[in-house]
Image 1 (spheres, rainbow, N blue to C red):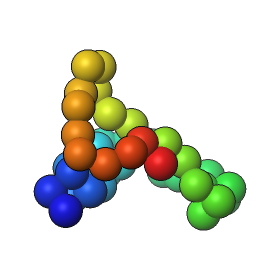
Image 2: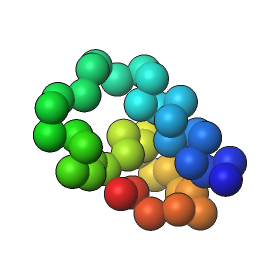
Image 3: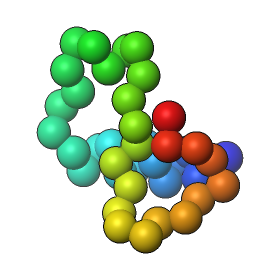
Image 4: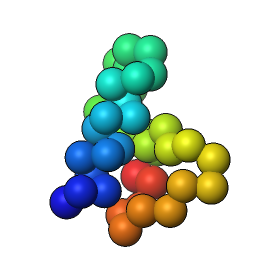
Amino acid sequence: MLSQIADLADFADQEPLNRYARFGIDAPRPARCVRATDLR
């Protein structure tokens, strides 16, 4: 759960999502970042 919260925090630092984001996008993780969940 903490990995998903960290991904949401990373999304908050990015530009607004486009209209196709609802179909799935990769999380904008920093370089060499390892988390318990997948990118998508």
